Each structure stands twice: as C-alpha cells, then as structure tokens.
Image (cartoon, rainbow, N blue to C red; front, side, top):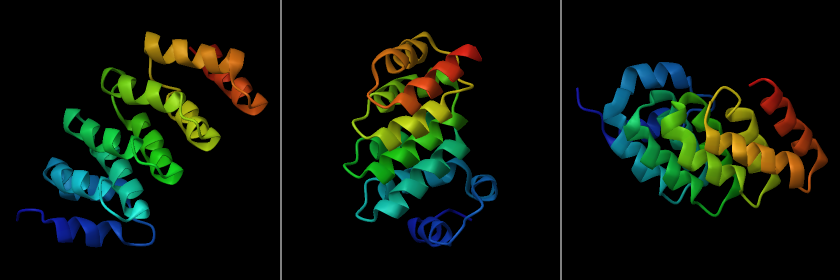
Length: 150
C-alpha cells in the first residue's frame, strides 16, 4: 500500500513514536513526505521528520535532514543534528559540519554527540575548532573526548 503524507503525519504525531519501527514499516517511500513535513509549519513535526529520515537513512534522507538544518528553530536543527548519527559519514559530512558551526549551543552539543562514530576529515577539523575556540567550556571538553576516541 502506498504511503501517504497523512499517514506519515499521523504516525509521527504519536507522543513517543518508535522510529526504528516506523522506518521499517514506512521505508524510503516516506522520504518525500518527510521532506514536506521538514519544511512545514509545525516545528515539532519537522524535527521528528528529520530524525525519522535519518533512521531510514540513505542518500534520500539527506535533503530532508538538510531542510531541517536550515530551519530558524533551534529545536528543529537539533532534530537534524540527532539524525546525522544514523547516516554514513560521507552522506552526513556536509550537514554535520554546518551544524557543528550552528549559532545555538544546544544544536552544537547534539551534533557533537551525533558525530562520535562518523569518521571524516572535515568533521574532525570542525571538532578541533570547537575544542580550541568554542565559547562553551563543556562543549570544548566534549569535542575533545570525541576526538580522543578516534
């Protein structure tokens, strides 16, 4: 049965959706609808859409996550930041490096947590910059810990 925007929206509007289950059930067919939601008016739904796209993964998820990463609301950008942990480093690199430079400390923090397993020279360079110059001491320490695990 084809996935509809309304079905994806209904499933994401649950209080605590099971993202792995939704990813398995909806699959890549949901990605165009998730892109619509990531660009929509509801910030909470946009954040959930970005995260689900990350769990679904693959190249088709990247535009959804990138759309959420460009939103003005920090909570939506944080959802995008959380989503990058599920992507291959090659796919995540562009959006992850942009989110590591986000003006919001919360978004940077979630991104640092998300990129821990991603091996990328560009991501590592951005982490080193955070470790040296971020105004938040906690974030400088966190970036240093991630780099030590490499």
